[in-house]
Image 1: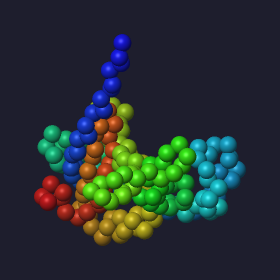
Image 2 (image 1 turned 90 degrees about the vertical axis):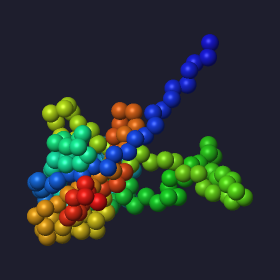
Image 3 (image 1 turned 45 degrees about the horizontal axis):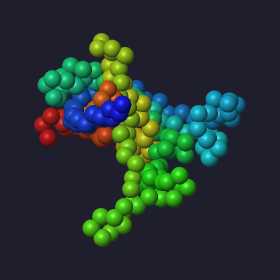
Length: 187
């Protein structure tokens, strides 16, 4: 008897507008945690710096757009850290599919040879513990971008998050994130 092939759900995309109501900022330097606890590393941290310079920005707000998601709470923890193990500096070539011999895969399209890339679900996953809990995400970004966000936080008293959310099955991912002074619902 043939097994039915499980179909993957088609992704659906939602543009969200979130009014930022509160923020927390931390800027710190620390000795790399993995120096004293290498057994806790879940990745190869050998190329990470000895001293970690980290900026953390926590943005909390309420969705205003679309109307069916209005009132939902969001809490995004944005961390400025470009250490090699954070994967912030990944390039397209890092996402190219490889065969069992680790040779890059290509395909033919209209007479051209093009690389085949592994799809990426998003920048960060979004989840919540229950309907009463906020949607939360932990996002590693380049320190330069986090510095730009901090400048906006200090510059304006009315900030919004523009979030392009991708939902596939039960998983939700942030595909695009912007911190801006204009309401995304008006764009």
